[in-house]
Image 1: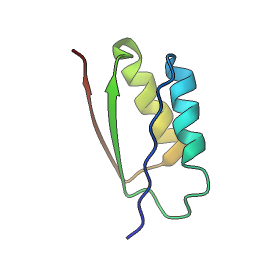
Image 2: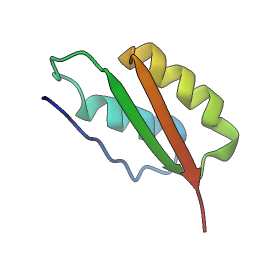
Image 3: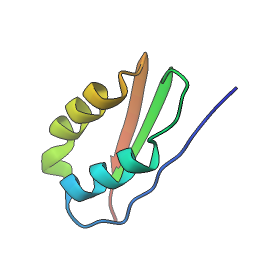
Image 4: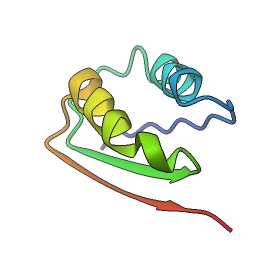
Length: 68
């Protein structure tokens, strides 16, 4: 089983997604499951989901958001 993870502390959603996707470059296995955890960016969650699906083409993607 192959797996990879990416974490970003960028303050903009665009920068955070670019950062995470860059960290995942070179992962040479299909993306069967993508799990996304986000704090902040509440207004941009739909766009983030669409961008991740387009870039990673996962079979299944789940996620949650939170904030204090």
